[in-house]
Length: 128
Image (cartoon, rainbow, N blue to C red; front, side, top):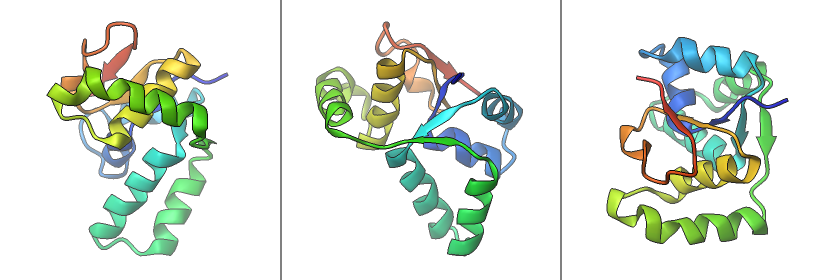
């Protein structure tokens, strides 16, 4: 059973051993999931920082995360979240995480404090 939905920022925090990375590690051990949209954000950021592609894939694969494909249903949910999140400046990736959390009725795990209480019906846990 899944424990939460990881935002890209949470997984990056784990890879960089930032504060709160222990919470991310525990969430993964407890069965966290991640959207393929957020996975692409993680790969993009790590690649941008100079991490070789093979190392990125290996590091992510070792975690054995459950990946949730971005489909039409989630695409609509992401679009419908735009008016609720526009003032806070949330990106498509941010909304993909929130939409998946809403869809699965799971908390979203992120480093982004602005998400907290933004959409009351979505449980957001900020790791640091």
